[in-house]
Amino acid sequence: MHLTAVLAILAFACIGSKAAPAGREAREAGQQGSGKFHTAPMRTVPVPRHSFEPRTTVQAAFIADLEPERNPIGGNTPAVMVADCQFKTKMPTINLDNFVQVQRIGCSSEQVTVTFDSDASAAKAAEEWGKAKNLSFMIGREWRCNNDQDAEAMRLVSKVSKGTDAKTLVFAAAPVSRNDVIAEFDISIHQHEQRREGISTSWDKGNSKTWDLGINYNKGTQSANIRELSLFANAQVGAKCLDCYSYGEATLSLRVTGTALEVKTYAIDVAGHLKANMDLLLTAYKTARADLVSFDLFSVNLGGVSVPGLFELGPTLRLKAAISYDLGRDLQVQTGFNAQLPFRWSVSSTNGLFAQPKVSAEGTPTFTPRVPQLSNEFQVAIAGHLIPEIALGLSILKISAIDLRLSLDNALGVQLSRGSLASCPAGSMNLLVFHEHELEFGVKTVGYNKSWDLWKSGRRALPCPNNACNRCIGGAKEATPLMPQPGSVSA
Image 1 (tube, helix red, strand yellow):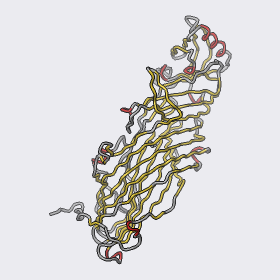
Image 2 (image 1 turned 180 degrees about the vertical axis):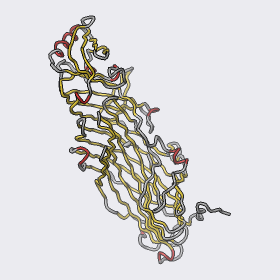
Image 3 (image 1 turned 120 degrees about the vertical axis):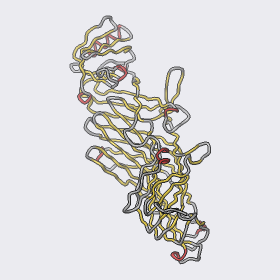
Image 4 (image 1 turned 180 degrees about the horizontal axis):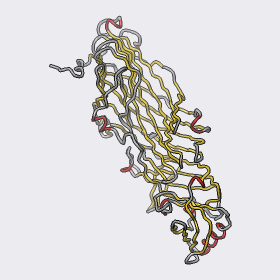
């Protein structure tokens, strides 16, 4: 996963109090935070044609190389992002870049000059293209035919004549809006491993490139880059994340169809395996309760790509973490878990952005909870949430600002009580551990913001230490003394 491939957000909050921003070290550990996504321009590659007749179904292909040093989430081998496109047009259209016979294209404000590899190729093009009463050209951004801008160009052809030699044709061809030519689009985007043979580049469409993912993780030491992250502190609660990191691998593929006015269908497939560790140190200075609230701490942009003038895709991969709690009195509690999250999510809709999509979710998350470290007698319900999320910012033709978000909330809950509150001997406690999962998909575009809960696992109990759930058990370690309350002075 970018999905993204996308990579960590840790969240805490208190009812009635707004949490302070995450500490400086947390912000510095984040990668490429929020804001408009950065994209690498894709270059045009031919979809070879052997005949010259104009068509109203036009193929186009684009690639962008992602070298290891340019890949924001690492990886040992180069990758290539591939976009396969099909356009249905309102008039017969020629994509000049699909003809290997075309050697050179030159443009002025009202003309397009095309040089072919032979006299015969030029003569055949003049014969076939001259028959069409209405004809448009699609021209790759590399030829700078869009008012000398680096963008895909469309030209409306009205006349063809011979050039300075038999290999050259000159077309009277004025600029025309893409939306006046393109009626429908069908765009698929995949990432593959790249192979190089001399100066040529190829890729195997049967093997998707896997992204190596890592947030706040050092592969060499297999530990967190920043061990202690201060999340927030207020008059009720202070919170830190200790040894919080995640790593793994993922793949992403996307297909979207539509018109200049709407998205008709889409399909997203995200697959991979993620491992994560999260230890939470929570200090409460008074009775406190918080429902689930999230704050951005980490976010990774995953090799966004664009074809200027046609589309722009900015995938982001995140790993959210959050906590909810209900505390009966002052206490300090440290608890955590590591998790393994294999996943394969497929989300699709044949009714555009406004209908609930279909979903396929595979993979069984597993948690290994750690014995809590506690102070004082207490009664506490606490749940940690680990939420891998892929977010796609997408713009096609004039359809802009489409955000698609797919997230899986993996919750691990611990209900604890100790001492007199548990009706147990001193040093013992009651313990209940459970987990539950929920897959959510969200769509946001102009005038529309909708989320769907696509799948829920229901609450499932986990085996407890010594098989002692809902019994008085020992073994809880005492934590360090309570941290000073914010604003107080310790001796």
